[in-house]
Image (cartoon, each protein chain N blue to C red):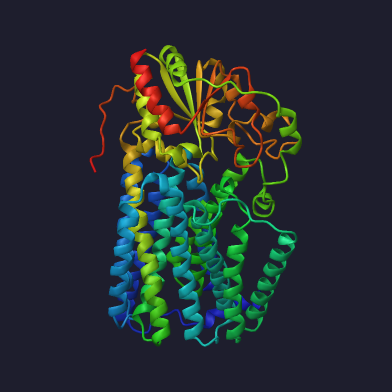
Length: 106
Length: 480
């Protein structure tokens, strides 16, 4: 089983490397926040820990882990979305100042 | 190693009854779907126009994986789960919605801390629950998890502090620092190896966690603000590796996949950032640049004078320029003047001039920092040019505006083999017909190196706060 997991890890790392190589520098900050949001998947492990009966300390650790991971999931996806919305405003090739200004009303 | 792997297949993989099997299969399918959506989400980042949609799909994948996990039979109580989810959302929502783009580097740094915290706590709890009675392979996974996790927790917190400004951004160094750090690191790694061979020592395990926490602090202490892009990327990678190790420890593939993606991304970014500074990883981590250099060069430049101009003069130049290139740096983020830059650009464009932005890979405090700020100010992204794309165009530029950038435009990187930044690829600003540097004072850049560009015949300095200067330029150009 461990060896299978190792296969999964190495192949995923390769996929990640080749996909991310193609991300333009323009989007490097959203890339960081996106991987951050995705790494919030540790929530999966934290949920099981907080929800099983392994004693108070384990539950408490689980509770903190769930909180931390949820912060990353919620905050990470929201902020990535906010950033990408800014980059989406203009289509590539356009933008000679001719396109109407779309300001985000906040 | 072989022995480690061979003893694992004994764990029963086959399901006990079919009902459980179906539920377990369902859970695994949500994980598989989530993994695919995450990869597609990252792939969508290769195209700015598609990216937002792609990441929304990834968020959907996350929701699926969470719902899938909640179906697990291992979960028997809900109050702490609900509490954590609610508290996390209450903290995460404002962190996602209200943090300004200028604070993005510290926002990213702190989120690495949260990710690593979750991974480390799961690892510690797993060790506790099993009372140290774990297999060698599991111990290896748990060890990696808490090692990377713990040093990322404190390292990211230090990075956050330095970027936020409550910890001094100047490198803290002392004699024998590297030797001390390496010794500590070797000792920690020694404990790790010992534990893998003989896992039943809780005290050693906790000592290892404590030492890793200390390593995180010591690792970031000597690193200065300009090297932050590398460190933030590296911590991103470590946080990923920690979650991957969690996946190994609890046998969860979606964790392994996400951790690997995260780790690969952080690794790639740190390599790119190091290259953009012409420095090796090791040099960034162990070679704290700072006080030592600059002596000889400064003396040589010492009695030369700089030419200072008024905003009015600059406004006239800009008004009649056909091609203007802006070189933004960390100073633009500090002065928060990206909106003024954009406003100035539209005024120049109205008069028929062309406005471009030259973005050095390490301008700012994290990868892509300048792009995000300019995008926030509604600068179309096809106006933003990478180093390679724009470097030949400086010769045609009538005016170059350097706003809060210093080391990335320092000709010493090309001309002076004695300079600490020698060999770093820079923007060829000195080829332009006229160079205007917006700068608060004559202080040296972050690396402490004098910038010869300021003394160039075609360079003029516009002193003052960048935001105020730009506002003045905007007023003046309207009157030209």
